[in-house]
Amino acid sequence: MKYVLVVGDGMADFPLDKLNGKTPLQYLTLKAFDVIGGGSLGRLRSCPRELPPGSDVAFLTLLGNDAVKVYAGRSPLEAAGMGVLLKPGEVAFRMNLVALGESPEGPVMLSHNGGGVEGEDALTLARAVAADPEFQKIGGERGLMIYPTDTFRHVAVAKGKAAEFLLKPPHDIAGQAVKGYLPGGPGGGWLRRLQRAAGAALTRHPVNVKRAAAGLKPANSAWFWGAGEACQLPDFTQKYGVTGTVVSAVPLVKGIALLNRLNAPEVPGATGLLDTHYENKVAAALSALQAGDDFALVHVEAPDEMSHDGSLENKLEAIRRIDARVVKPLLEMLPALGDFRMLLMPDHYTLLSTRTHDGTPVPFALYDSRVPGKPAPFTEAACQGAPLLESGDELMKLLFERG
Image (cartoon, rainbow, N blue to C red; front, side, top):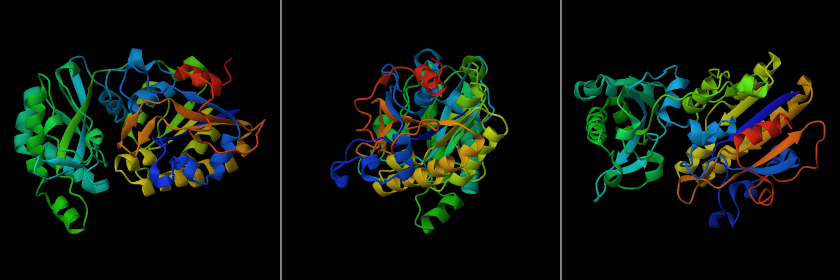
């Protein structure tokens, strides 16, 4: 038996006037989703009430962890996904490249992801920040180290405690003036100085001049958030008796997988954006299953990113692509490996109306190739009256038929 979990990050939503009172899942015709929707339906409280809704908390839950007990901040999970393990007395941060604009109220958060900056441009800008003399001088006060990636997401590690910092995720303040959301707490002044230095280094950088000339938003500042300390997670294989691989472009998800002793391969072309290489993700999951793994998780970040950008059309397109380029080929190719069970779900709601996450329990559908049901739409409304699971451990036991 093979087990597959497909996660469309943030694809659940509330009804929208622009869709005549329907959610994106209700509005679209999704034939592959319908096959999974013909299985058993349920809901999961992926984000416990005690914690803020987000992919860090949700993916801890999805992989069977008790997020309330183990959660120690987002950034250590992302750092682990880059092979950076924190030492005692260290705190990690996510450092986003962001796009700030001007307004009468001061700088405004135009884009939490630097206008979608990626690849060599993202690496170049992150390295420019890390090499800036003023940024280095300020960072040296706490032994700051920057770990760049080829996306807008970068990791920073410094001496300190997470409790010293009061930080706001940049995707929660899209379109708003940032002055009321700058880093606070005893260590907040240090981070504010770092952000000012980063802005000075980036504003006239040649990469941003080129982006502006091409009509793209310049990634003209850095934003620190998600402070956290070292996190210990249980061995997934020992807990559930299955070996597994997690396919994702996002360091956060990779980090949670690695801390749970699951594989998290690098996938060529995986970006975490709408242009991610869906086919390579499917191929990586199938390759792991063919090589002997029992379980594969395929994560697609795009619906969440498009929701944070406030783009209804792009969120719809992201969901279409998951249906046609992830779920459909998996349904076609998995039978060659024998019987299988496939779970389809978002990790959390991401609302186009607010461009932020919501902690409403998420819908899920579970398909079993041995007892396929009649195809039916997989939507939030279809799952509304379905049983509610209060823990990810219950979800994993349901998937793996553990009682």
